[in-house]
Image (cartoon, rainbow, N blue to C red):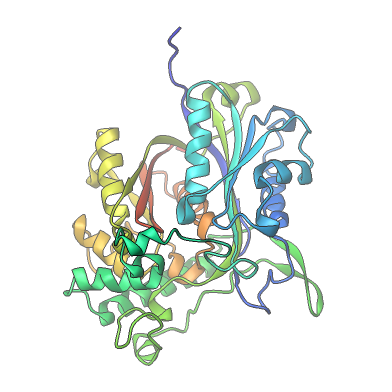
Amino acid sequence: MARELQEVYVIDACRTAFGKARPNGAFAQTRADDMVVKVIRSLLERNPDVPRDKIDDNIWAASTQWGDQGLTIGRTTAILAGLPVTTPGCAIDRMCAGGATSACFGASEIQVGAADLIVAGGVEHMGHHPMGQGADPNPRFLAEKLVDQSALNMGMTAENLHDMHPDIDQTQCDEYSVLSQQKAKKALEEGKFDPIIVPMTVWSGNGWTVADKDEQPRPEATVESMKDLRYPFRVKGRVTPGNSSGLNDGAAGVLLASEKAVKEYGLKPMMRLVQYAFAAVKPEIMGLGPVPATHKVLERAGMKFDEMDVIELNEAFAVQAIVFMQEFGMTMPDDPKLNPWGGAIAFGHPLASSGCRLMAQLAYYFAEHPEARYGLTTMCVGLGQGAAMIFENVQN
């Protein structure tokens, strides 16, 4: 028997602070699964009308499913978070878009009537698990020239994107990056992230402390100060630590509900999922991924880019953000629609968590801007993919 698809609503979204992936970083001695537990508990504590025994699935992503990010982290964290033993969970991987994919897969469960309440998110402890830890790429990739060697290094793919767009130079990327830092500084000072970042008590070498602030932002950055930074990916390159996202630790998650659950439990949704899409490009130019993903999601939704009131784009590298802006005719170098509270160049990019970070920023931007109706979240993905999601503001 055919049945109508259910609407999917985002009830809440939050994240931990993002620490630097260093031995002295905020989360250096904190487990990845404990960061996930903190996010799950925070989402449910902030929404007491959501019955814990009615959570239909706990879906979590990690790019490196190893150690404290392994063992089917969605199921283990459901148990650790104190959810009923009857709560199922799973783990998925789409690298940088892991959290976005968790949310999309959870949304699909709701749409077809297989679930009414879903917790979904992503985590990455890059201090414990460097990108690619334990991976063993098939030698055929290079031996048969299926991909160029640069495809396996994200920074080199950004340099490749520069090669494709010689009109985008380092100065433009540095200018964009400074703007991201300045927007983040302003948003943080104005308290925009107070409802987004959940404080977490963590152990450090100096005892217990509270991690409640991102470690990555560099508000003092200037174009002049960035000129002498090293080029880690290519001799005389254009990609530097200043115009790239950082290596970080953190978790982010969302609470999703069907229209039935919203009515039954008296929930107040923040936004409605309109459509989502994934796309792929050559792995060597993975930063291009948001472009076809955005075109695809707009086509599937029957919408135009101009209908988007705000775009949350994950800034893996400044060059990929600028390419996106050029493709969609956005105002350079600072379009008011794009990342109004700053992006990953300022906050950091703990891989699988970033998709839900974007959703959290969009949801709370919507809360402050009832005039904004539609928003887009989009990101590039390692090995040549892109993800995009369209949401409608339902808070007005």
